Image (tube, rainbow, N blue to C red; front, side, top):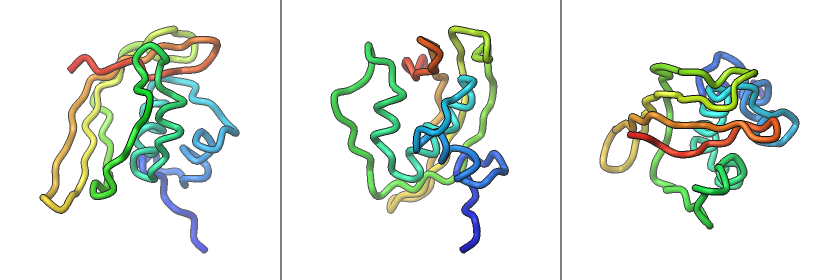
Length: 126
């Protein structure tokens, strides 16, 4: 069976990229890597991973994904901080989806915080 391309469009296979983060064998080293893995979690329906990587002060109690949305493309538009030695980071992105109503996209500027060596999604500022 051929390797599946990672939904985050890194150019790597899912198993070599976001799959390692989703299964817990690796952790995100940057805010952008966490953003990419969270997009992929939406694409492959992993709400457990989304909740695990959400900061506890802003995380919802539960998360239900819309089965009718198919996330297919992620464009990283800008990053600020969020590197391996930072404690905060910002990633601006546009994520594209298809639904029964047609195609659409979500533009967001997301804030991330690194605590105890782990990057976590904090919130969106737009």
